Length: 419
Image (cartoon, rainbow, N blue to C red):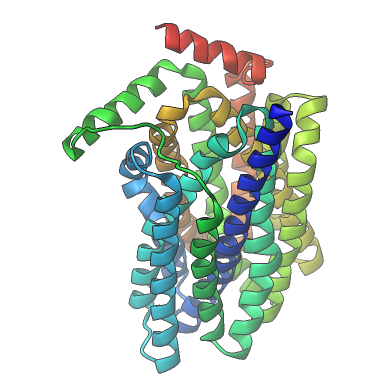
């Protein structure tokens, strides 16, 4: 009876978290299509377009570490509410600028940077809340549902809504984006309880000490360190192509602005399939097998996109990429939750995100340079795909069989606690 009550309470808390995540990801999805489309109306320079993608993710490189340390000290639910509120205000201000005709590419950059800093806090807090909300027994399922919310919001719904509303009235998608973030903040009020990881009376000056503690733990955990490297390489190499997606679709495949959203819609379908299938694949194979197969699938998809000029084939292959990368993310997220102690999760996640998300602006800028040098975004996709096969090979030789399934994860945590 007690177990059933606890499970019901956990399910209710997860529903509130997922509802907030769905609203914020819908706003994110609208914005991540609307901002590049707005940028394309201001410039067609591939370096400036890539620079926007880099700017959106630069805060992960600069702020993920201190944000992770702070999330190990404050109530993570309240941090999410504040961050989503900030995003609502900034995007609302951008909508006002677009409506007044006063927007420039540099103001778009500034808005993307501010939203990115708030996103670091909101997304990191949602990630580290998962074990506190559901416990250790349902991590694969909870991570899959969180990924599904991200896919439905950002790609399946947000992409088409963002592109269609932008084509009708350029201000409209930014207003919807702002409303999505505001709803996400309000919904979290229903997530009852305290989500401060541990009581502390340390002064802010001890932040450096806490960061050092997270680094020491990560240095000792060779398995988590390898996973960070693999995730960082996937992020860096795939962003070479992803930052050029709008140019690939509009200039290379000759799609309209509205059709670009439908192109992303197919990616959303693939992502949902990946989220649905990944937990089942883990049960019948292993997390290592899903990680290796997913990385190779990403490589195959981008290689194919670089070789085709068909919009239908390009969209289908983008759907394959989305399915594969979502499966990889679910496996990595569950492994991280299983391996890392709860009171260190924010700091270790900060290091992880600094590497993985910090690689995105680097990859985006390199992708812009590569497209400029090769003369076609399709060639950038082909290069990215071939490099992803190389990352899959690196992962194959770096991770032994069963390296981070549940039993191995438990053993590794015990080992490091005994030290």
